[in-house]
Length: 295
View 1: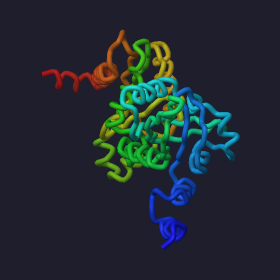
View 2: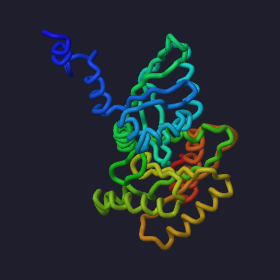
View 3: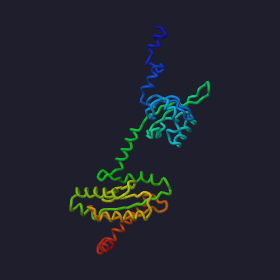
View 4: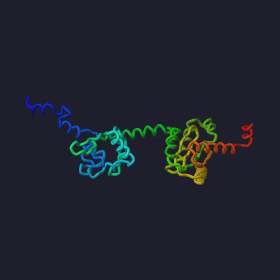
């Protein structure tokens, strides 16, 4: 068999075959690229250009890799290349020139040109945006109360991390529950009780700002977390809720409230609001009932 016949028989059957490698580069859904450590993109396949959001290699070459990612993550990846000579499944949020974003995994290694000493990065970029969105949806479902659509107790851990990223962060807390909810259920049935809970949750969401949070902590208890709120603002919200509730077709409820003190954690603020709610409910109980409870 001649050399030309040997070559023809190996076509598309070997990774050493140039035609096979060209097919891989053009057909794979993963982005393949060659870049320099300073951020120049020298070549890439169509999948890489689709991920970045450009239509041609010429457009792509006008983009620098540092522009595609957060500077801190860029430094982390560069440090891995320098110390290990490679990165594996390095996750970051890719910022496209058109303003869009993608979540990606970057896997690459360092290549040194023996003739010039030049360093190059050969890598594969995998778009994991759909996977990240599914994860987000699953997390969202796990922290939502199925009846009211409000957040549930599990969300406190997520919220606490977000709020406490800054030691100077401020927040307010309103802890409320429905008055005599057990009696309401006994009289009207649990279906009516569920409707009352839904109506109250919707009322709270309408009255609060879009970035404030309502959490159903259990039963007929709700907690509203007010972002960037001092004591005076919390009091104003409480008064607005009281005034709106007077003309709304919802079950009566009681509230305890406070604002963050010093550097206390969110759980401590919530606990103080809960204690104040208990005090409010005791104060509004009939005198004879208070004496009975104290004895």
